[in-house]
Amino acid sequence: MKAYTVNGLSASGTGPNTAGNIIGSGTIRPWINFLLYGFRTNPATTDQQVRCGLCNTTGAGTAGSAATPKPRDPAEVAAVCTAGITHSAEPTGTNTQANYFMDFDLNQRASKEWGCADGQEFVGALVASNGIASVMRGVTTAIVESCVMGWRE
Image: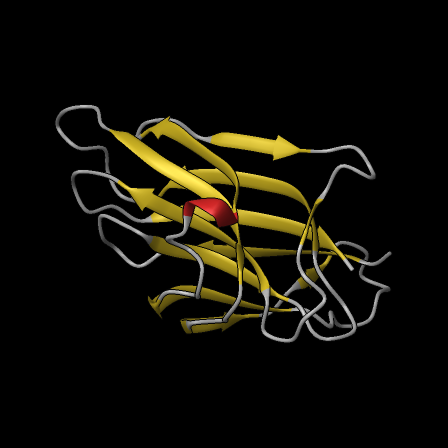
């Protein structure tokens, strides 16, 4: 399988705000195997918890930018899956608890890295415009989530 990475930022807000959405097709679906979460905004004067998640999406939403997936091997061809970042309209499914693979909290001053062994990936549906999104679900003061998403297809 080919492997790719994309870097994304959410729009500033209190959530839900999608940092990145990897969108599959009717023939290729994303297999998420690496995530790195952080926050681009300066920490608030008091520490605050940020609710983050990784979820299935059933519609691409409106991305502020279409990020170009970067092949992890420079000899690979361009990705079939597409990526959207800094959404102005959230992908469908990002505020539905049943769609979340992971739903966790981070301190605004922290970062989180997640990786998996082969066969343990989070996998998107084999349906056009469906994907997997990294979402800052909620926080008390507006922030910007930063996320690096790695996948195979």
